[in-house]
Image (cartoon, rainbow, N blue to C red; front, top):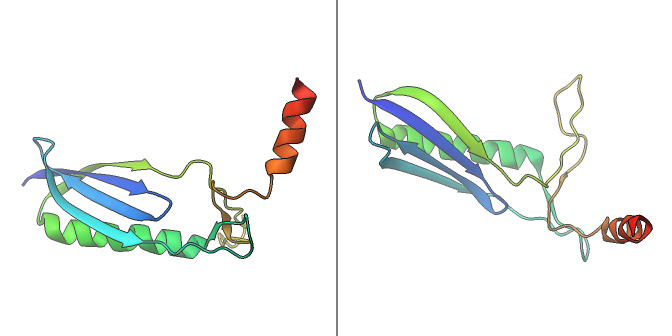
Length: 117
């Protein structure tokens, strides 16, 4: 049975999943776009459930294309600075994800930068 490694890239505009074979050659690819939300100027948000669904959809697509094989490992990269607050009890997001492009804290960051100088 062939051995596979999955690479998940959860980015700002969508999720890409690649499956690699034993020789590290890409044998399949899945992609699912994520809608951007702009509630007002300077604000950029994502629906956290949309992010999760995009990962599941892209993964399933790539896995189906890869065919039979044992999944040995999964690597993940993501947006890093995007933030989501989760409810510990329910496991559900409390509010939309604030995307790294969002500017709502720019003034506070600048104030802290000046104070540190």
